[in-house]
Length: 281
Length: 290
Image (cartoon, rainbow over all chains, first blue to last red):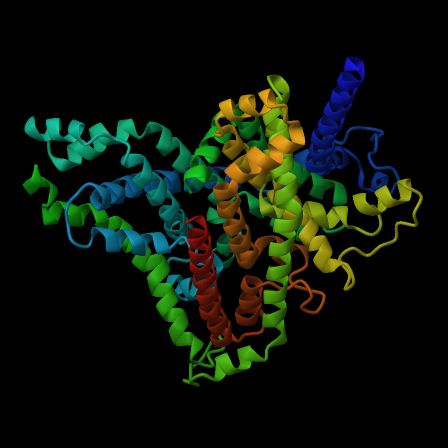
């Protein structure tokens, strides 16, 4: 009797484990396929097999992708713009959260609510008017055309998270500081900010993930390569090499690589950060 | 303390950057959109005031209603397919220990860190009728494998598959975190009472996850409304307007059909719909909890 029960249990375990494996394959196989085809030549692709074993590994695909995809320039732009956006979102959300949650003024609640409203506004509805505005004041093709909307649309979430984390900091710490003669700015930036370390990480990760992959605004507000970001390596390539499929696969694999590598290396921290933000949100 | 904490000048200096960003990037464009929504502006030349004309057109615009229908379909897809799968996988994953748990969690989330640009083009290739993964897979199973996945008949389903696939890891992670927050004592008590895995799942995990599920469903519906990037690159709303979504439609109207004024009118309605839906969902879930 007991043995049957045990068998049943282990059978159930196998079923559950297979579900995990099947879902993992579904999620990851398209990417394996991408990587596999990126090393082949275009002629080899027209097989009926699922994966191909390339006769010769074509590293040239990657060389072309790297050079003609402006990989380094776009990567540099992406890193710079995203880091700046993260910096501004973190600083502004800490300042605003402190002012709205800790300081005493009549409109604190109203201002907080209005700024949080930004979360509900569909980002793409601002594409048309923002294009007009940036055009009129000469911001198109500058770094600001990306920075401003990236900050604006990550700010509400940042503010929301910072406010809820700030509430868990005991106010007594600040009281002691005030008695010692500390000013507000010193309290905010040298006492509160270090205490918010883990929430800063969460806001930074969310902001980075949101904006790293953005290309719609970039493609409307930018026309020259100067500030274009990493997704453009892929966008521009498909026109340029429309018949050379293998090179297109290479450029996709190449531009996906930085984020995937960073994620796999830091996956524990990133997962924790996203989870913390998501549950609070 | 009180005096310092109600210093108007300091407060003003702290909130000013946030307010400026909000005004410049969100409020001003919305006002401008409202203005252009009442005009027949084409993108160049002069804008003439036409009153409610654009909004009248919108009511009988098939492309717009198609986008609403597709958003609804996508939301249903998220709720009926993606989320049950995500909860189930999260619950199983929670029972695993050690390296395997971390490995699977990492694998499921990887598609989320890859740019939509890459995802869309990758899936265009996966749907390719000649050498695409899907048709080759069908051939391997013994079918003919000549389906035109992005053609009129299948396009919207193909789009749904991509979006459900891409967002799976995110949903899974949130449910996983929610399940991890459940007090393990409850599971111990259940197992002492002789409850098996499925009873534990339906009687303990699911009820306790209710708030997480509500938040997740709200976000799924909103993201179904806001969908643009994947569709823009994968099908650009076509063929016809079969895979159209509101954001993509307003972009097309303004920049491709040169009806900038009309595009803005769609934008205004689009914003209103998003606000109303968000507020409605928050209300609906709040009253239920009491």
